[in-house]
Image 1 (cartoon, one colour):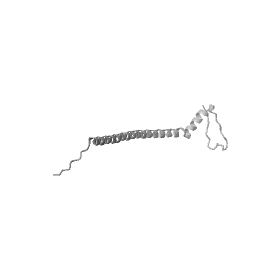
Image 2 (cartoon, rainbow, N blue to C red):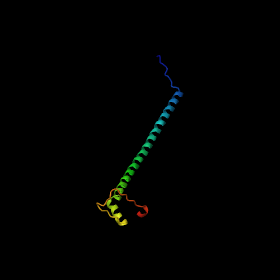
Image 3 (cartoon, rainbow, N blue to C red):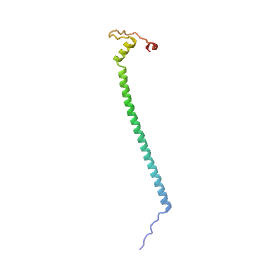
Image 4 (cartoon, rainbow, N blue to C red):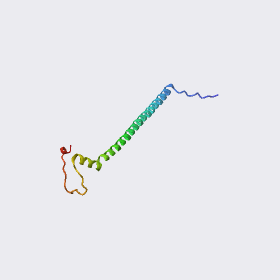
Length: 103
């Protein structure tokens, strides 16, 4: 009947281990919360980028419509009485238009 006396864990070491465990858990949970908040902001930025891409595509189509030859030709003939003739381009000559005459 020789029993070895059971070792008792001191209260001090028990409290230290609980405090260390608590600190580790708090750090872990705060890290999870931080990562989730970054993920939310990342998703918001992705949505904003998608919207900006759509706006850019719409603006590109507007540019293509506004810079079409037919549109420019009709405006030139209506506002400035200019006409386009197929083989009338003189190469090497520079045409200068003043801004005041265009308005």
